[in-house]
Image (cartoon, rainbow, N blue to C red; front, side, top):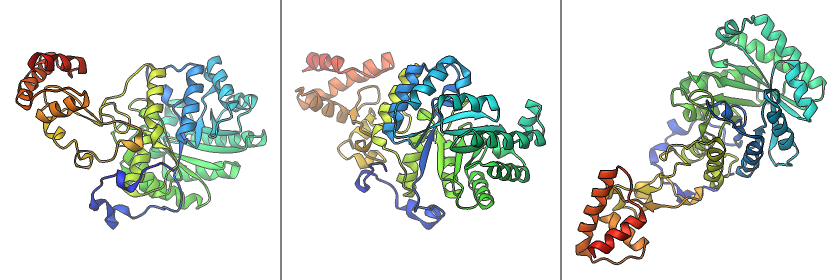
Length: 398
């Protein structure tokens, strides 16, 4: 469970309406399956080394990720090495492998000692056409791959129906049934292209739940092409999903995957759904993944953005003493700090707070002149004013 306390969130009473809260099974804790090391690395231009992947895996375990997808060993020798080392690391998280419905992919994991494997194949007619598959070929491939994995000693298999959301529902039901009959333990409902409205997700996951019964764990895997990955994941939980698959920072193919930390925050903060994740570690994990991937997220990104608890606007800074007036939740449970920034949009409140923060003295009648210097520099150079620059301004005016 995360460490969010009631006095650290400042929501609206409207969120408590029955129309908002209905439909969730709060008797179960939602857990997360992280695919940063595989699907996340599919972000264009991203390349994690084996050392990167091992370091990230350790941080994911500290975050409370239930399952870590270690990777796809047939991609390269370095990926093979990463999977081997992650398996040997003794992490609290379960380590899962990724495989296509191909014997060679499964063998690669067997050779490394992988105990749990996700097996994928497309189930939509559109993608079948692109690959030159038929429905019969896909069904046979699923049955053969699942049986092979189980017969060879894979303890648990998750059947991952690529492009589930664009699949014919009758055929999708047939494929899930075939996979389960062949020995699959779990199934994934997959919005590969990120085209589902949240309402559609809730409906589809609910349908799948009615097909497979209450005892089969259902995963949701969604992409962010419409900017709705978090909303879709929440809808999947309302529809009956047990696990949410996603990545750190929402990395992934095209517009990325669901951001695990955003989903965890929304489920707890807005819907009171218990999750297994320690959000106080979210920003630390995010920074590591950015460093390893050599990229940066937007400073305004939810949960992990550098400036989500930093205020530049004067009107907002005037309320800085009361966090609940200007922020939706406390910085404390994310292990973050609140800051005042100086720039074009600053006001006298910014000046006073920054003077106190830096333990500088300037008479009140000089604050306006200091502010003018701050605004002038911020406007001219289109950036924030540094603390050293502010000290110099104070010295000049005072």
